[in-house]
Length: 618
Image 1 (cartoon, rainbow, N blue to C red):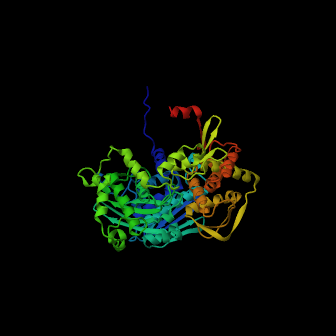
Image 2 (cartoon, helix red, strand yellow; image 1 turned 135 degrees about the vertical axis):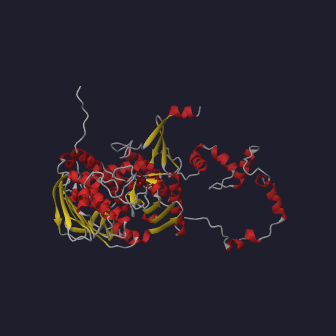
Image 3 (cartoon, rainbow, N blue to C red; image 1 turned 90 degrees about the vertical axis):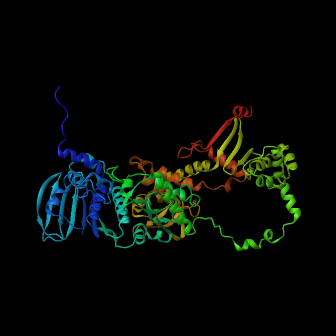
């Protein structure tokens, strides 16, 4: 049989490599900006047209390149940063593998102009699909200007799979934001289709965070600074008030390089436990400096995933640093072992301890348990019922019922509500004439012919509200309540693009929102049924959904908007405290087209059959 294995041509190999490194216009932006930073630039200009599909141009005032280096930079695996294998374990630069320019040149039309500060003239190179078309001297300022035109012009299939201009621009903004955050000492300018998006002057970290992410964060920034022998942590975290229901305002940098790491993110989120809601995400911009030998940055083509020598150590240091900062600025409670002077004036401290009180105390079983050696950790089983009876005699029920009264109450079938209240410790309205009972404040129990039905109240309300909103949507008659003073809603540049795209849909569910300056929107009207303060939460959830929306989910956007609205409207527990409200909830639920499930597929109720109940009781 003939031989079938052969080497790929350089042209095809470069295109394959480009598929790994250059996935979309934002990938090229990232590589070009990182090259400019590595060149020692203090001012960088980024220009894009048609979301990078037509043009991506980066101009820097870095050290530039000689004519030979300019040509060599487009060869695969040509790099100035690696000389031997040991260099891989002490990398502090952004690019080092020599793949970026070769990959870009394989799928674009590239023009490079560069000049060393000590040279009188520079070099100009034009490459199309890895083929050098022009190499000549030129007049250019010291530094480098590289223009990338017609991305994927020679790979139509790849170009076809690029998303809309707004989506690609949002990804470019993501990359620009990360790089600009990591380098506050460099000035950045960003132009899109002839309009200046950002003009960032050189400054400190706080100024860069506010300039990039919005002035609303300025009053919510908490500095983090921890230095150890192994790891240095610095940057900012947000106060609990800055937490949002949208991801994307979380930034980790290892030695100046942006990374994604769910394990480290959990360390930060865990430090906020009890301070923010479970479905909220804290804001942070955190920089970790560690010996490059302790971290491997060469595990992914985009270099956004890394491996640590000791993950647990990194987790512990980061978690402690965030907790320390929250406590230092009186955001999280911390233990104070100093004695409050007011304690000295309490009656229990001032009044004398009589001999009678001492004898009564020594008779109690708790005294012997804590005074006898090796007894404090033992729960005495002997006469345990007697001990519990003593506790019940001391503790009073909310209705001030003694155990004897409790026994008589339990024997009365008509007082089933009081039994449930005493046994569960929750407020109930009891068994009314309609045979329903409120349990733990969030479930409704009612008897049906086949057994017992348990209804999740919030989910039932969510289904009811969803179908109400859907009916209003279909009739195009959703009421909007005008507000006395417009509500300002500020977002990041990326989120502003997303929100702008769904303003017509939001208007159809009752939101009257209009752009109001850079990355800011003014809400002049809100859905009439929406509780006060929930407007921002709805918008946060909508934006978060859009960030993770699959390409084929556009036709389901109406369902998504109504689901988020229904979720916010279904938090009214007061409506079902009275029997009439409970009956009304059940009537409305079973008038729905799909009462068994919420819009996102969760069970609303469950029926426990009579046979199952009897089996539970043996």
